[in-house]
Amino acid sequence: NGELSGGDMARILIIDDDQGTRQYIGRVLEGALHSVAYAVDGIQGIDLYRKSPFDVVVVDLVMPEKNGLQTTRELCEEYQDARVVAITGQDPENLPMAEDFGAMACMTKPIEPEDLLEAIEGALSVKRGWDCIH
Image (tube, rainbow, N blue to C red; front, side, top):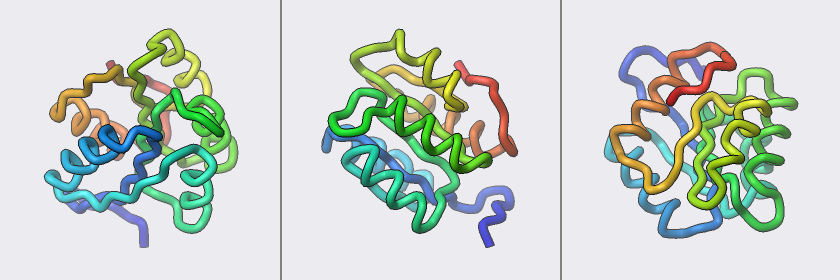
């Protein structure tokens, strides 16, 4: 039914072209008992989201094919309730743009597990907002 009560696991989609990052974030989230799916780029990620929307999407901003900014904008335009957490290792100056496109939290790599989980919890607790969690 998609309703989350306190402590329920969330369905989280990780969109990142770097396999190491996907596995790392996946381990952290699965360790917190969330259910995780993976996409290697924005095209695959949006495709998966359309089939079955996720509670939170973690998207890397720098990817081939469709980058994270395009992916964030597309998801947030198409789905008013999309919750996106943007991450980047290369271009932190892109994070404010990700916020403009609808990302709810923005993080730079390397990502600390507790920061990631805090961002996910923060995104889950908001119905839909424009505040970026720092």
